[in-house]
Amino acid sequence: MGEKPNIRIKKFAQLGLLIGSFLFCSGVFALEIGLRTPYDTVDSMGRIVGFNDPFRAEHYGIMASNIGIEGLLAYENDYSGILLAAHVVGFIVIFLCGRKEWSWTRWYFAIQGFIFPLGWLGLFFFPSNVSAIVSGSLDREDVIDLPFTTMNTNPVWFITASVVFFMIRSDLIQSARERRGCE
Image (cartoon, rainbow, N blue to C red):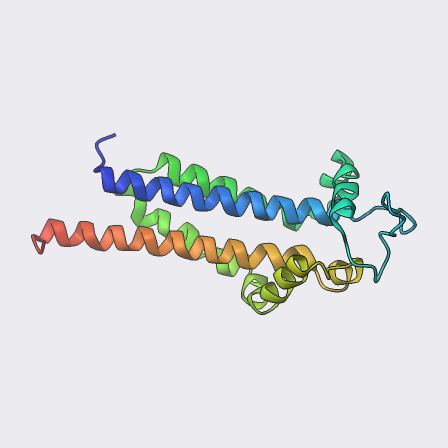
């Protein structure tokens, strides 16, 4: 490969960030698809997966069991599919590109904030959504009222792409300094 060990560690860190973001975004996407559960569905304790009823752990399991290929391929999920594809392309770009190609590779990650502009807006909603999930107060209304998937996945992708961009940029700056003999 011809890369310094430090460069390999950074590349693995970038790939790890991309994998983590992909898994998170896939999980949120799957939650929305699984939410197509009928309103009168109840868990083993008789709690409904209703409009204003908070989701419990078993509700998430019920929703997961309702994820099907037809839901994944539905046309209304195209935007989420494109977001997941952007992760895959980013992974391939990082995995295949060597240090020389990084000057153009970083721009792939820089433009993600423009391709998925709701990531900027989602930064304001994301903390409250995470808080609702952690506190157990998330309900069907929270997921349906706002574009839940977009407001949660786009900021995570935006942040991930930004971090990868700046990691690549710092490597390019370091490489330029080494060529000039500054270090």
